[in-house]
Image (cartoon, rainbow, N blue to C red; front, side):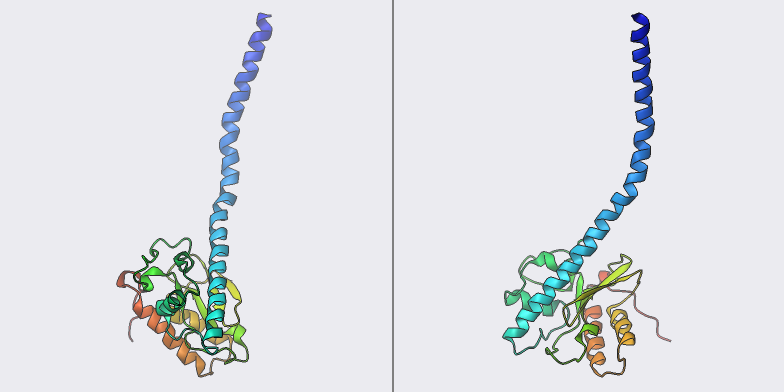
Amino acid sequence: MESETKSSWLLYLFAGLAALIMIPQMFYFLLPPLGRVRPEACRISSRSNLKQMALAIKQYAIDYEDYSPIESGADGFKMLIDQDFLTDYSIYVFPMDKKHSRSNGHSFTEANTSYAYVGAGFKEGDFPEPGKIPRAFEKPWVDKGYMNILYLDGHVENFEKVKFKTCIDVVEFCRQKHNPDDPAWQFLLKNARLVDEANPLELRPPARRRR
């Protein structure tokens, strides 16, 4: 009887030691996939934010003779807020963006949004291929290794492993892929430049050296 008790005790001891050895190894294999869940969820959430912006801009255009908000950057988003088309401030902040904060309701500036609105003032139907013209996107200095871009037709496209420094870089990237000589790109580049310049100093991308 004593021998059986001792054997049982040793069995439990070895089982406990085996568990102590295996549990850390299980976490080792499980943590990498779990670590990818949050970035992927944020990417999906950001895509949803842009789609909600697209819907709000579409509704705005219906009320304003097919024109989208005429101000670039945060001022354009503020027009959506002021006219009650998209008043949820959290939509304007990228989920993993630690540098921006929600507006307090009294003001809305570039410091309150993680997104760049560059498709200001365009009219629905201005372009034969609106699915290739950028309307808004995540500010590139919110570095995450990818870029979600909202186009004029309302669809959102994701680009992996892209590292843009400025909003102008993003527009130039789109311009090179589609009819780069179209005069409309100059308006988009101008809007992108305004967004770059309007951000607070601590959030602005580094200035380019002049040659």
